[in-house]
Image (cartoon, rainbow, N blue to C red; front, side):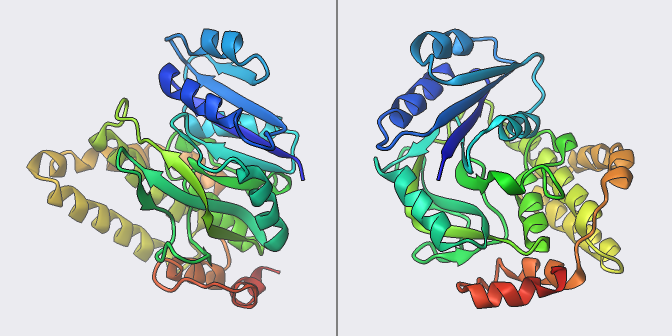
Length: 303
């Protein structure tokens, strides 16, 4: 099983150097390492070319966002499996790739396998699962700690490029469930994720996440649930903003306007999933499933 690694980066040369150094210490190594420098203005491009010439480097000029960048890398990849990392996340164990291949062979129904993250300076365990101690099917995954089957990407299931940044992973996971595949959380596979503070602006990230979450509802939610799910998402985000204080609350209409501005893309790209699949996907956050038979049952309507 051939495995590639893809990383999108913007002006984090030091973090990317550390990650690439760790990737070249893996045994076995990845068949290819693909990097997208998304509008970088620091020394990132020169560093990769001079210190890691084995890597395949592409550039966006100007920056187009992480969703566009990962879409480019996935379409460029030549392997069966593509590991998605951030520029500040890397596998912990040297035999990570061989164990990942075994996991995909054991879970032929998995479109994506996501891993345990050891986050921040204290390496706090985190992940997409409710229970981090066991494998299970999950509703979403982070692109800093996941691997995807290349053969499934680019047809019906793909990232909405107009998302720009954030929430493409839950939207893609839902598309995969509608195709009859799942997203598996594997706790024995671990990545170290430093969560570099630069460019992490909480309010701006909230606006992007909230907008894209609502867009995903408009793209995937079947009738007659769509207006109720949209209202629920808006209310939930407003409650969160209020919990952060007055400054956040009075700026909540900003992302409402951002959401409405994208209506043409939503009309053009709307692909609702079957009601049974959407309902089961929503329940995964509260009622995780751990066996293939249950997965087959919840996605049977899409077959």
